[in-house]
Amino acid sequence: MSKTQKLLTNQKSATKLKKNDSTTKEYLSYILYLAPSNLVSGINVCPAATAGCRTSCLNTAGRGRFSRVQMARKKKTTWFRDDRESFIHNLVREVGNGIKLAEKHGKTAAFRLNGTSDIDWETEIRAYYPFFYEEREDAIFYEYTKRPDLARRRSPIKFTFSRSEANHNVTMGILRDTSTNIAIVFEKMPDLWFGRRVIDGDKHDMRFIDPANVVVGLLPKGDAKKDKSGFVLRNEVVL
Image 1 (spheres, rainbow, N blue to C red):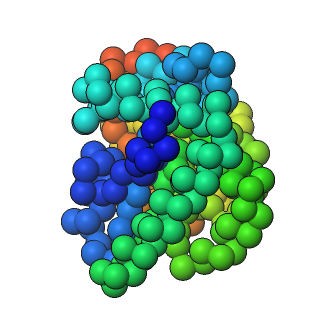
Image 2 (image 1 turned 45 degrees about the vertical axis):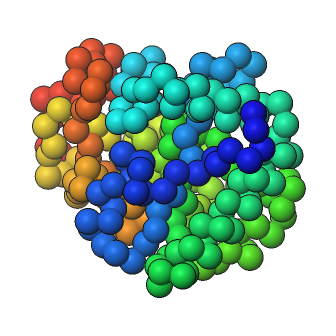
């Protein structure tokens, strides 16, 4: 892959981020899209993926339905697999450029590096840039994750843990032991879920502005509307 090709997409062209600008003008958001799960041979960028989340993945939503976009994501993933140092170097450079552009417009840069992946970016980046996050305290980093090790970690990254059909017990442990927010896809969104207030996560993607100790409710989209795995909670009782 050409090392001059951009890795990050900003909210002007990323489907997931377009609602952000209508919610608040304070942030300039960026997202990194890779080919999810094990679509690229030799690497699985979603180690905690389940059958339900693979079926319901938004990889093909919005511009992702175009073959050229899918090819670009696969090339990025191949680059990450084959030349990690170069990939990280370019990613860090683009983050720096994004911060400068945001500052130029009087905004704060916010980065979601797992648009369609679930990589431990803190470990990956610190392997080459040990003080990356400390030197960029003026920026925001946030993620959804199905990895309990990340959801429980004290980190400069704001994590929201994602429930799936296969991690209910882990989800309940996160709910019981932490104030980490939990994202759940509901057929019909309740007001409460096991005592936690449910907020509408479809209004925007900026999980870093959510209050702590809530459930981020999402409605099924695309193939998720036909889910029968349990990934989408149906007829959920409010508890």
